[in-house]
Image 1 (cartoon, rainbow, N blue to C red):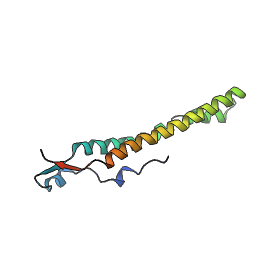
Image 2: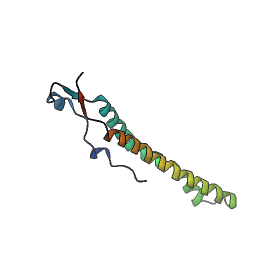
Image 3: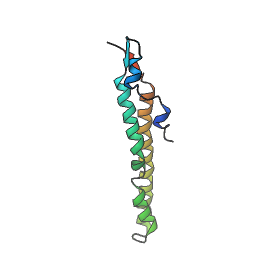
Image 4: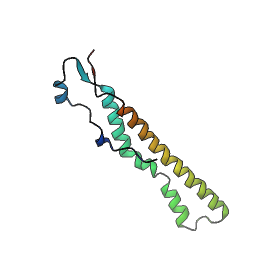
Length: 110
């Protein structure tokens, strides 16, 4: 699963200048602003999560610190967990992206 498009591919929340030009019956959706900011934050930091197990794998594969069948088995498990972590990171982004894409930027004024 690939990561979803970057935040810039979606319309940003309406700023105050744009909000003034809305009809009196509409207002910016605060949920859209919150989801957009959450997506920006998550997209910017998800790389750290995706790479969290890379140093451990690099150490295991790049040194003689631990050799033998147990080391290979553990390394295989670590590599599998790394794949699960990367998929989970992408799923987090997709969940926020899907919700944001389905949320209106403007709602009716109450």
